[in-house]
Length: 356
Image (cartoon, rainbow, N blue to C red; front, side, top):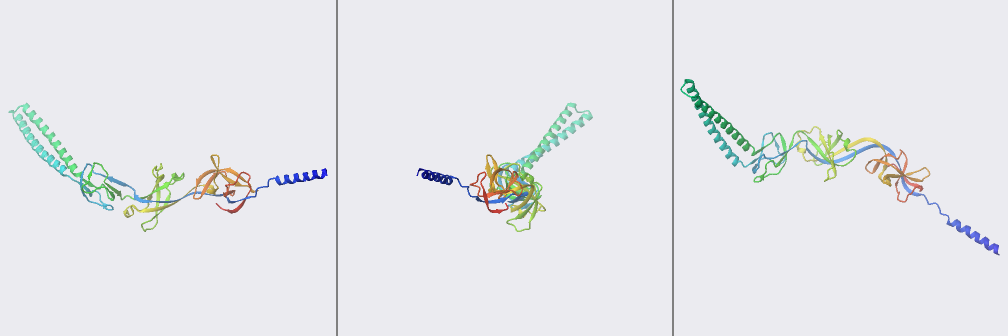
């Protein structure tokens, strides 16, 4: 009886031990992608506006009250054409005074010259003195100096009158104005903006990217958004070296080819398209990106279905993808989606294999 009881206890112990053994976790179904070697390309779609290649900001050389504004935005002006006028009452009066002073100085100089000639003639005939001749010569010299000063005063007064008229320095188009009749403006205050006819450029605000320094000299395809016209071509001429702190973007300028005098496009919205291939990299979807300490990593899948967290070096972020320069090989299997429950050695099954 005792033996039977012992055997029963032994069988029960063996059965409990068998039940206590952990079962292997079933393979986790995840989306697996194959890493693929592709050209590292920057596909930019830019939105901006068309501006003049060169612009001018004009202001009066002296302050005063505006009496006339002779142009409107969009007007084409020629070199030397008057654009606006200031009240010139004081300047005209100053010019009249300077001209009267000039006439008096000329009369005084003429009298001094005649007196000097008479004194010289008397000295030559022996009836005059050297002192009188020297004194007459000195008076003539003073009169000539006064005449030169009067001529300078007239020239300055005439320039002051001319400065009350704002003129176009060259052929251009008026793009903006900030003055009206009756307004008081200060000296050198910008009141008119002009666009020269030397050419047009497209100006874009682009998100910062490590590949932007490679853009100068690249060709860009341009299409206007609010003006119907054929596609245009341009060349990147400038990439701003600093990010604009207000917008967080970088300014890119593209000179438009064969558009020197088409000022009707000024201010038009434009879209640019640029493709830039500079290198190669292994591409995987951004959803595969994980973290291992302070480094980027991805879950790689071995032939037996087990996973391992492999550190990688990211060369560039693309549209929904990442370019890996180190850590992955072409064709290597990577967990694209469903990595939340993974740990090293965990076995997985592909839910659907696809290219990145």
